Image (cartoon, rainbow, N blue to C red; front, side, top):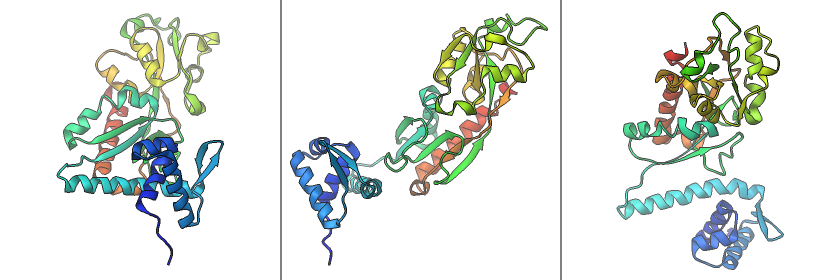
Length: 305
């Protein structure tokens, strides 16, 4: 009969793999780094599988280690949950939410109070991540992304969007009546990052409007996030091309206006991904439904029509 790994050994492996360091694991477990190393070696011998590559004082997970980590982390979290419940310390639901950085910085963070008011307090970890995200290693419960990046997990299309020229009201008054769209106004460009080819640029917008902008389509301010570009537009520094999901609120309250009507539809929808390990949790289901509603309300705002 095979010897089962000890709970202390598995705990040492999980802490070292999660923190990326034997020293950090030792500090967390209140033992020495040498003890952590020995516990993990014993687990490897008992399992007959190598869990770490040890290279120049660094440790890197093997495929077997990568496979084990999320399951052990979830198991120890559950043990902690049971322990707290038995001791009378009620545990609030935990949720790891991953969204694009521009959505984390303002759009979603400003709305989370609405979710808590409706569904109660929860320990929410809000992450602003570029694609791809490590679902299992980071135990991500729900991911909102532009485009279907994660078909290996259950993924659904939740909303289509477009980009709109937006600017502060005082700048809109400078548009020449009957002249070229946005003639003479400073432009704000967005460096869309690694998915840049999927998003329209100012040159695309002028081409759709049947206008030859010349060098004007390349001049002006530039920002490396949708949120930063929107803030520049609100402050009156130029006209930005903004996604409806981001600019709807500022259009509704009058901080922004649309100086030209033409919009360009985005090629891909916003998608929501929920791994199977998280799908049955009540807090995940509640957050999924709430987030879909928030996205669809913003994209379908009457201010954008």
